[in-house]
Length: 285
Image: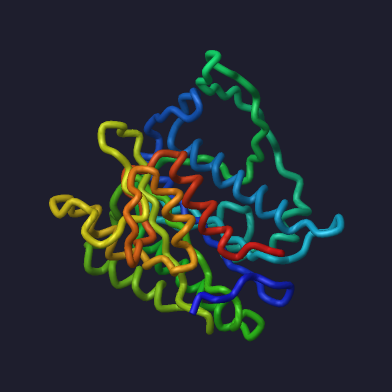
């Protein structure tokens, strides 16, 4: 299982679900720039779409290798962040859109001092931070679109969908058991190649607690209820990801039989790494 790589005949489905509750208005420092978590995640999501479009270019055309959905959830609602109906948008369709851009002055500390430069960012996603965190409703709505995608005959042999849930807090619309049920139903959907991969990325601006990325069994603190809940609602990563996961886990060089598709207290750097590993699972050749 999980043996496929994307081909001209087999698309990949990628969902990025973004918590846009009020707590995402908290500040964090990204490359020397003080911004809200909502702005940082929107910037990263924009980078990922740009990269997927770039990967789909062949002979000056865009091959329809990916179906993309980016959804937000906050204030009791779940909604598309790509200005389309709630569902997937083909990458070739997205590539035709005119998207606004902005530039940010970023700074990096180097051996010779501080290096500053402007980075051009596509504004695919509008930052938002308000209301509560309807994560249960999000899992339920995403399950609906993922299951429809998987049931299409042309997708039956594709690599299974990958769903990234980016959040900084807990669900406001369900207790733990109900949330587990919704997440497990989502993970039980899939194609002939395997079940849908659910990757939960908990981001934090708290630098006092080291991030936990792709943990193995027993690595999570038993006293941290929320970290254990995230493990329970996350997929086990397929074996083909192991080399990339070990490279990403810079704080641990221990090899494990299995790694969970989650992070806890991740920074934006870890967020980018996890999104990159996941989206490259269906890399085009």
